[in-house]
Length: 87
Image (cartoon, rainbow, N blue to C red; front, side):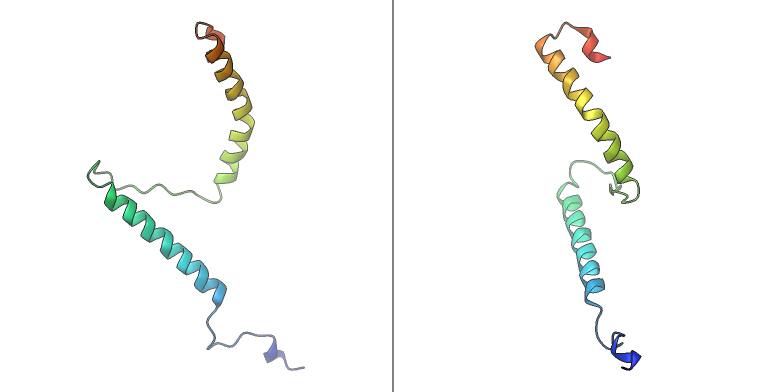
């Protein structure tokens, strides 16, 4: 069996790469549209992006903190004068 059968042909487009590029392009277009629609509200030129390397760290932290936060909010809702919920 020749090795060339296992390799993709150079003249064939790499479909997964093309799909990933199209997905990134679609995201960029959506961001540009959102910025254009919101341009009247403020003049900030910063685009928030999610760093795929850092997101899991923040997600893990949120999963640890949310149950405590939820309990404190329920406690505060039941007794607004109870200041222990703020701690």
